[in-house]
Image (cartoon, rainbow, N blue to C red):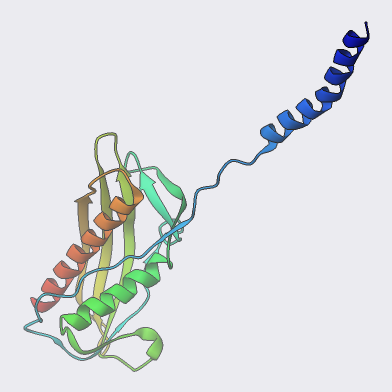
Length: 204
């Protein structure tokens, strides 16, 4: 009789401990993925322009629609609906990053005497402006791709003459479904766009 009472007492004492253990397990927070930050970059030009612009070229920050201009990376499964990646961001807003890459690429291509950001207010002879139409990962069941589409224009500041205006589109396959592969594909696409833009500028 005494043994049965002791067993009952032990079970009674253990019950609150078991409840607390189960409650603690149920309330434990899930592991939050680590945030990732990516840069948009293009390589240097492989050749100098044969017909560079005379004077200073000012490049203004690009424009973009509300979602495309934000820092979270975008993906689409059907080309129409866009979604933001969780925990994956550009290091800066795309309108600033791409503008910086336009400047760096045109400098390496010798596209003008000087290529500078418009904030310096040097009174350039030409102005380059643009709009980001697409900047996204195309996520498919079999293969992914990086899609970039920019509208770039060159204006003669002396008479507001439009020297060049064109929409450039590049699409590169990603080696796998990862975000790293998508960013690599987008950077390859940006390189293609700037290469074609410089070629058109040279052939104006």
